[in-house]
Structures are given as structure tokens and as C-alpha cells.
Length: 208
View 1 (cartoon, rainbow, N blue to C red):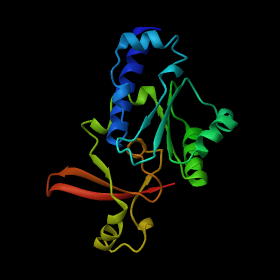
View 2 (cartoon, helix red, strand yellow; view 1 turned 135 degrees about the horizontal axis):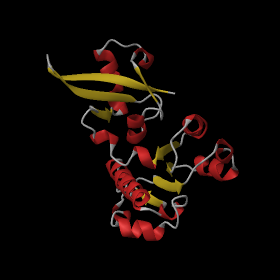
View 3 (cartoon, rainbow, N blue to C red; view 1 turned 60 degrees about the vertical axis):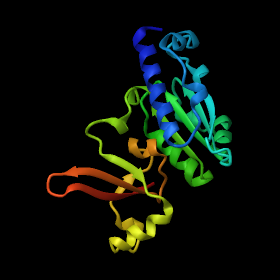
């Protein structure tokens, strides 16, 4: 495996660990690794499954487990296999699948189906798209999920009778929603600098 492949996998893994840490998972056991160790653990650029792991929540009272799979590619046919069906059906679990290909429409559909059918969160990330953390890009404003307890207050503030009245942001298709772990019905608060008001806050609702 060449240096570029090792570098892409190494940097994307660091980004993924940052994402999971911010979501409350304990990633400390998986955080100490070097490019040389990546090269030794990954036999070829088409097989980095050995980098998969399971992370528990930092709060021991939370039973949630994150299953991280590292796969070269996942076809539509593979997503229909018993292996993935059983994985998506697991209660109290979140699945993150890191790919050596770009995330496509069938990955988005699989994530939506898993949520609608099993109420489980499945996220697909391409190694190439998380070499750098999209949340830290200078042109990406601050995004955060609004706690469900505050939804009614926000709807009342803007005289919204239904969440569908908010502008939409697409579940899984939008990379920031995917990173945050947003699901249909969640409200996302976006904060950006404004030349006139200093700070401008607006909201989007996650749609299927």
C-alpha cells in the first residue's frame, strides 16, 4: 500500500474518532496509532477491515454501542444480505461504515430504511470525504442538534404549527447531519456570522 492510501486512512480515522468522541463515545482505546501502524495493519488498499472496532459510551449508564466497520465497498446486493440486516436490527446500537469508495444513493437509502424500519442509526462515510473534518471547514457554519425538550419552544418562537414548516435538511445525504447523528424530525440550529446583526441563527428540520 502506498503512502497516499496510508495517509488517507490515517487522517480519516482521526476525523472519525473526533466525531465519535463528540457524540459521547469512549474512543481512547483506539486513539493511539501511527501511519506506520496503519500500514502494518492494512495488507492492501482494498482491505482495511482490521481497523474496525466497537466503542461504548463514556457514560456507563448508557447502553449504546457504536459498531465501526471498515470496508472497501458495499454494493446494493451486499446491503440486502443477512449480515447487514442483522447488524441494522441490533437494539441500542449505532453503526458507522467507513468505505474506500464514495457514498452513493444506495447507501443513503439503506441508512434511511434502517432508521424507518428498525429505528437504528446507520452512517456511511467515505475515507476521502473525512480526510479533513467537514465540521471544522472555514466555510461551514456551526451546526448543532437542538435537544427535543426545546423543540416546542423554538416552534412557538417562530409561530410554527408543524416541524414541516421549517426549511429542510436531508437525513444522511447532508454530510453535517450525518456527522451529528441527526435523524428525521430532529431540529438543527445553524449559527453563522452576519454583517448586519453580528450573529445570525436559523433552524432546519431533518427530513427523510
